[in-house]
Length: 335
Ligand SMILES: [Zn+2]
Image (cartoon, rainbow, N blue to C red; front, side):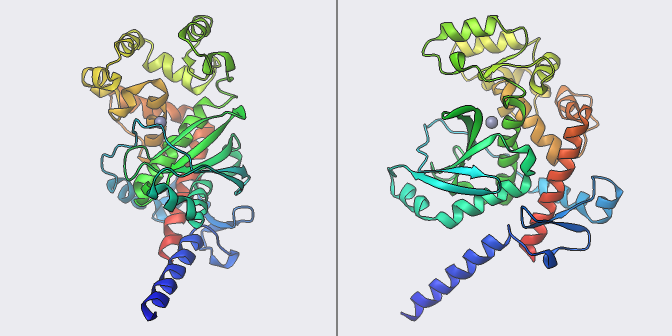
């Protein structure tokens, strides 16, 4: 009995500290942080300049990325989303449950505190105004590793998106952060303002509708639709993919693993092997490296893909916000 009480106290203490990482009071802020009323969080407010260096942010970011080993965050299985929430600003509400198919799924379904903590981690990293396209948030598990997270158009309104996270993978902070920024990169580059959603092509039962939509598209055709001329992904495609797209399509039609085909041939073009999967994964990986790593000097195409984002002032600002938030979050964890 004593042990049981001790365990319960321990669990309660753990639950509290996990939640406290993501909500704070104004008096919790450090001198260089500002309190965000809506998020109930303290955020570092410096830009990525000398003031941030003085605050130790540059060193922190280098240490952070050094912890990142090579890890895979993709699996093949069709995930069973055991719970799906509606996103309402910073909050999640109105959960809809799905039948759990395994003991692991039943366990993660019951752990509602963790659903909230995972959401808040994401919500605190990405400023609210930038993630308005994410209308739903779901939780699943396929065990550790395999698929860590994914995003997809929301079937109820495909101009919005669903973010789905694996509860079993939210254990390694660095990997989880990398994954969240990567997934957000998809929404940033494929949202309805960048790539107007094409219902007929996306939900097509056969290839004909897709091929028609693709041949009618004068810019890069993402699976979600025809990209706008000025979109990030169209500019990225023009610069880095147009010359190898034929090879990529041929490899895909062979149904061989595309990244295995393309990556060894063009290794210096890609930041990771996974980036060679398709232009959408490539821009998401390049975006993630842009956010988390220093500006590269190298002459390789891979380095150019990171520098690509520095041409967009709004993305340089967003990077500064995200990194400042990550830094504040990590300091909060140590408080
Ligand atoms: Zn991805």
